[in-house]
Length: 180
Ligand code: G3D
Ligand code: MG
Image (cartoon, rainbow, N blue to C red; front, side, top):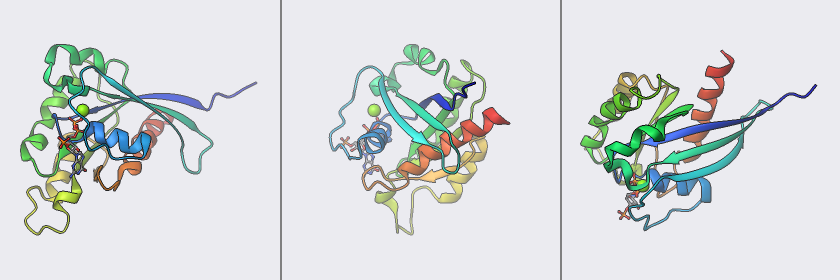
């Protein structure tokens, strides 16, 4: 008898345009920061194979990025179908991008029921060490609760801070939700 320890997880990364979603994915999948990501049209699909620590579990992450289609309401519902997990992303320098996440959640949950999710505050390099941060860590943590996300991670796609952790964590959350 064979056991299938290979799993495929569809993950959607959502959030307002220019918060850094595509750059985060390039950093994670290609290990590089793309200075000029442009506004892509169509959906970007990123694939990465990982092994969960301390577990003999191989997971293929299939990560969907809206490209420039954050702006096109009509096409987004198809994008969410079949997702196992959601990464909510905002820009640590732009409060609106944080406030808008509740709308992203509502939209997603009109299509699929609530899934394991995490909250990411990106562009940490622009605010790190700043005593007058536009958005405090506590506000990120509050929003995490509001979104029913399981954790809040601050990242810099530019400096490759926290990026691996994001994907390991969402994979772990999905895995745990399946075996529960
Ligand atoms: P999106 O996919 O969410 O729309 P992008 O966002 O990945 O296209 O990124 C939007 C802009 O933010 C890009 O700059 C990108 O280089 C920049 N960016 C992404 N992540 C970071 C980060 O962690 N730190 C900093 N400082 N910049 C980041 P341009 O100039 O190409 O618009
Ligand atoms: Mg993009």
